[in-house]
Image (cartoon, rainbow, N blue to C red; front, side):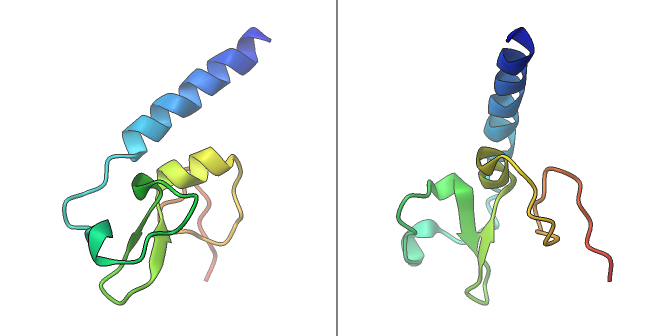
Length: 79
């Protein structure tokens, strides 16, 4: 059980680290909010696409293997 607690603490610290969004990302107030998601979970590209942050992926808890831009699990999609 102690290892599960360490894993939880490690994931929480990564969420805090990855939850910091660069200033270059679009302001959430300009775009439609997504219900159920925190502002640190996603941002909009200049083209209007939604991009999930590493913090969101860590909260989700697993890799979807779609080659996400901010994948914290290290998955790289083969082209």
